[in-house]
Image 1 (cartoon, rainbow, N blue to C red):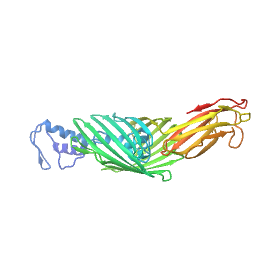
Image 2: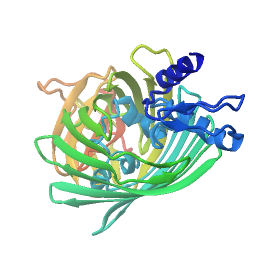
Image 3: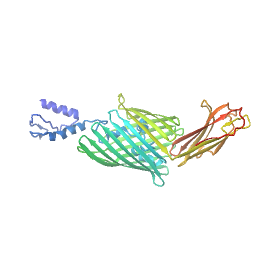
Image 4: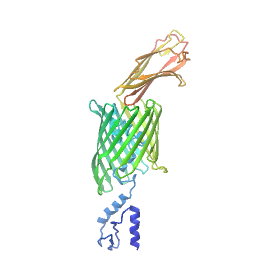
Length: 434
């Protein structure tokens, strides 16, 4: 009777069916269970694999090895994670090789990114990747990931290519992983494929097949990374200052999961983000200055948990914008002899400008003049120191801002200043910034 109770306990704890359950007695007795007789003597040599198998079966999705790819469930990149991991339609940085390689089709500049993740189970993740556009071929990306947890380490390498075809793009990722769990170690090779459709009234639609070729690893037994199908959409508003993303994911042997995210840019250098990863809330923010960017994300392990995972991403974009503002003179008097100021704009992008905006603000940040349009900005503009209603502005320092959005929705901003002084005669001076 005692042994029957032990059997029932094992079945409940490890979710085993009653077909075959092996109970080993320290007294080397022999029992018949479901028609299978155990030998009187079971050595520790046979006992160890059994215990390890039972432990592996009991691991949860964020533990060690329910699936060998579970460590990738944390996601890669603070921006994507903070938006609920709904990133299939928005992926436009080196992490696209993980989320959707088709996103690389519209990455026209060189980018370098590094990511550090600290997870709630005391595990850590490190990633580094870069992009390299090549004329006629598309954009290549390469990256590597390293994960370390309790009794488990994993490292992986990615090589991706995204190619644009008119209003749609396609991408492929080749990848390999080396994984170690306890005394077992194995290597597996796999591939992903993605497609994205652009120019649908500010909507991008995407579909991704992750592990289309499954990495198979021979650990305690042969284990494969699960095939995962993900469909996503990104809706952008107000010159991509607001991005709303939605992903639906179906993982092999798992239910459908929903991911949603929102990104709001109140300023070109600051972003606020939030989302839902299935049932788990996510949040984060982003900072940028010129070609540099820094992103942070925080995620709870469940909707009711106080345990959090964090990611920090940093990177640089280079080679895509050439911008500057030249002001002559730097001080002028609308009511005096020097009634206007000449403003020369240098504004071009490596692969084409989508929209531009020119704004002049007073010392309090109020807009006194605004111009905007599509394609390339004007080469120059003469400002007479007047408001939109024709009144003269007050004395003070004014900021001139030029903002460009390129055809992959990357934004760059440059500023310069000019001073209005009605008591100043014609100055012979010039201020330039590039």
